[in-house]
Length: 250
Image 1 (cartoon, one colour):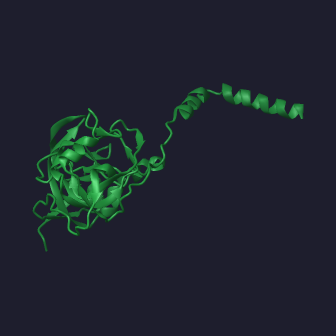
Image 2 (cartoon, one colour; image 1 turned 90 degrees about the vertical axis):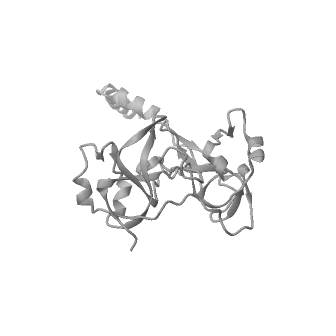
């Protein structure tokens, strides 16, 4: 038995001495763990809720305008007092730093985004807004208040061979990445939610580098994150003009 363990000890010493072992070991040890899902919201997907008024919201916020670490954003004020439908629960998101974060008791509301009710606010990407349970109350009202709805236009996503012919060596076009998730929408028609003329990058708002579009209902599922998914941020997928054929309603 002693000889048996001595053999394994010699093998282990040789493995540890192999080039690159220490670097690989350090990377494995430092590999960030993926946080679990936060507690689900008390509200049910599809349920109608009313966003509380400004005074009630302000009572929940700390000196930094946050509740349990989640920032209340300026465009959210325009939705106070409105009735909305719960679209999905938010239980884990990727922060701007790239780190995953668990989040509890939070939802996204249908058609509610950083563009606000007027459609003129936000970063330009029409990002969904997060609402804590404490900012909402149930209501029996069966109709949601109108959110920003631009004029209806349609686009057909080009076939994959046409799209790939436009991509650079990094898989993008004019700084915009064609994401793997976008492939499934090839040769399908969607309504155009918004034309993007400006985007926020690294905290700075800049003009879009080309004509970019957001198509209604097409959002990131987080699948591209692999083992770290899901991310419930539901960011809109952004489409380059060269990946679409623009059409009028049939």
